[in-house]
Image 1 (cartoon, helix red, strand yellow):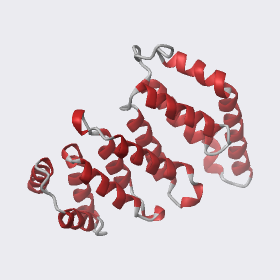
Image 2: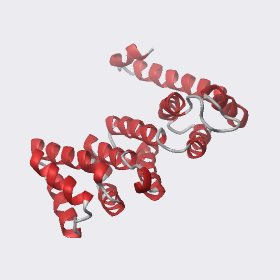
Image 3: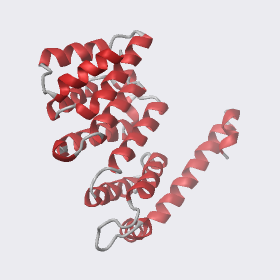
Length: 225
């Protein structure tokens, strides 16, 4: 597999992968063969740093075609690597926004049948991608997160993402004239969305759900209180 990774990296660097090559690689990675599938995804994720835009778009689109219930952690890892390994002239806003949209859909649509593990991994991937965006883009996404909290949907996941984003993306100096650090960003969100109240309401709602589960016999949830 190490040799295969070197060959794949070389072909990507030289922009020598054909449509047939990409399809063959993807189809092989989707073979439900435990160890082989894991190794192929490692090769793909490891080669992400050498992907050109056409490769990144292709593999994002193929992951997007996977049924939610068939999603595995390697799919989330691949989306994240594709969007976080671009540098300099290879940066593509189209690719980044597409990856964010895919992960957002996984996180926010409770009807999509993804497991909780996949939802949590998607949330981490989302925040990792945001941490590599410009400060203006990150502020826009943070506002989107706060606005979504106000709809009372997936609040506990939003809090997790927002917390990671504030820690990783707002270390001074940010280069923004008004938002110089995480405290400034919190103040900004508080003024626009009443953030603190939203967090308190979400915590109260979460505790209510936990108590309801325990009252129905879910003793394993007592540790959450």
